[in-house]
Length: 140
Image: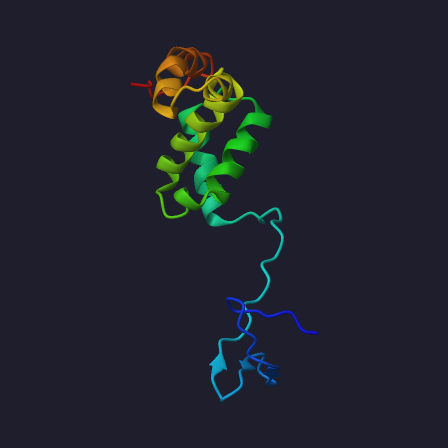
């Protein structure tokens, strides 16, 4: 016995056309199956990567190499920063990285603080780290 699908209604067998689309009984055509997303791989050196690396180096020259790589990767792979200017993406990624790796931000969230409250309490810690890495922009 076949399992019903589409909200529990059994539409019967479907024919698959050579282009990958499915035809339901009665001739209704279904959209082709979406291609599977490739797993996330290291992106080769691109112009955007180079611009973000240059912006980050100018922004925080004393940032350790491991942290530098992590911030650049975050700036490249973040959906929210995809269309941001390289300097803006570098700054936002840097602050986000420092917030999660050098402060008690995640612990505060797990204790029930809101994101805004946790960011407020972590601002001084982030400012100290920004001074240590000789960042030319100060956190407000």
